[in-house]
Image 1 (cartoon, rainbow, N blue to C red):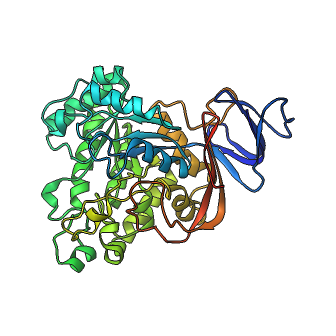
Image 2 (cartoon, rainbow, N blue to C red):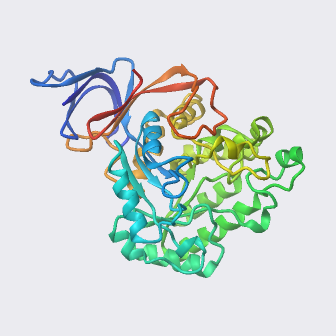
Image 3 (cartoon, rainbow, N blue to C red):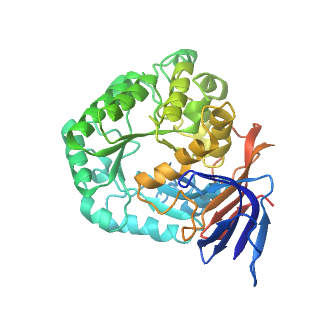
Length: 423
């Protein structure tokens, strides 16, 4: 048993927002209340005075590089990074090697995930080999444990295939996520076509790359009734397209990555490849539009697109280095700094975007705190400043390394077990 006393519980599902005691037993929440008695028997106690408790965070856009590129990250090191960031449930992307277009790879990931202290789920691919040509056996992969479908990392360019995929997932009542970048508008990926690309003397990635694909997929979703996710949204125009799609009754969802509502293309000029990502960091108007989208519910979820790369890879020239940054260990702090502290989102709204909403979309038993529910919690100090000097992730590719952040995870509890503690 674990007894957490005097903690400020914020639970969007129940509307709870106040001081509570929480008792966990056998992986579940046994009791929630004010001034609960300390139970008899063997029971660990955490004094939560001054801390906020929330349902464990649910990050539905994660790359653990396992199988295929475990020198960057593997499921075990990735899970440690997740726990350090207050994340108790992750949904992995399917662009591994081999791809998650078959049952063997799917089972490998699921079984290895069970060896970690957190909940590890995975999407399967939309098309075989991520080639965009032939759909995978979605019914089989769903039955064997996939929680969604995506070819993240590769845009689905064939409109006919995209429509067929949406029709298939609609029939299965599953979400499908899209990497919305049309290569026809990209000369050099990972860098915005604007001040950043001009600084490096390259062509960059034009905003129309995202706008074009989002416009197409919103229309297809409206026609098919599919539940789609616009991944790592980066442009103000795409935010508006999602907003309009929702207004028209579509099952349109969108993710915002912390780097996209924290940084602009100026960071690519300052940090180089450490701020290179797909889609790229864009302009201040885009950053503010993403924040507005999160505030009014247009953007449902905050998801990191945690993308580990080695130091050697990131030290290559800007046009050769791979895109992506890690984000699991800084997502809560950046969200608190950029969204909660300035008053754009309440604490309950912030936690809803980081836990309850993604859990609901992917039908996970997570994202809420209730008696009989999973004992998955994060305890954090929203005001404490800290400076990450080394991350738990195997890779360290982040522009936030060595930067002072505000909002510190103190404990992460998954299935009633303390999987991360600051001490």
